[in-house]
Image (cartoon, rainbow, N blue to C red; front, side, top):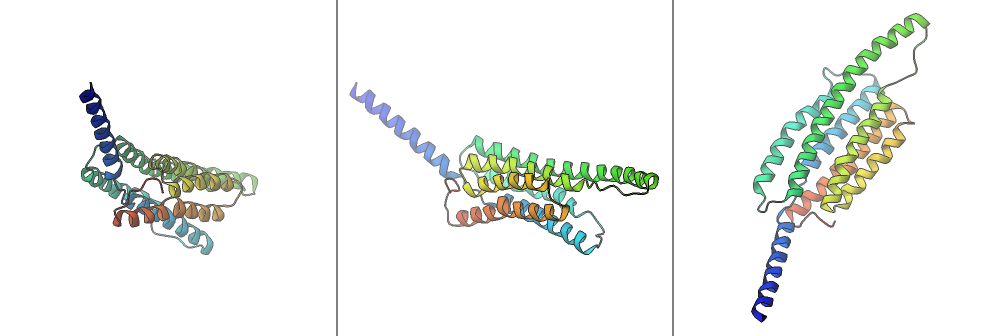
Length: 219
């Protein structure tokens, strides 16, 4: 009976060690958040400058979101191979961020095509009524973007128990509400702010902790 109890204790101790090992075997390098934080911040600020100084680009700067999907897939694939212990939370986050990247591109594509249609409608409205419409669709598309930004950020911050990203996701939703009542230039600045605090800064924190060999949870 004593040997059986000792065996049970040893088993529990072994399980506890395995859980601890699994918990600390995965160190998020922060490359994904740095990637998306940089891309969205750059796209937002360039668009703001384009509107502010009235210049045109030879391409849609937001197409960079499509280009960012490719390295995101490569990064996720490499990190998955480097993990020593199977962790379903990590797999879930890989799919969450991959779907997020695709959703961002699709939303940009939808917005671009919808704006083209609305511009035609507004032109006809101006020709018939002699007055331009005050409606600007982009002022509301920013709110939809920020709503989308907050979802994977809060989920990731919650799963990893990583407060900088969790708070960053909440900031995205706060800015989402604000952008409903502000003009497009303010919206773009709030989007850049959200991307910086939700992804870029947390990503840099994760990268520094990874280089020091520290786990990314409970930060």
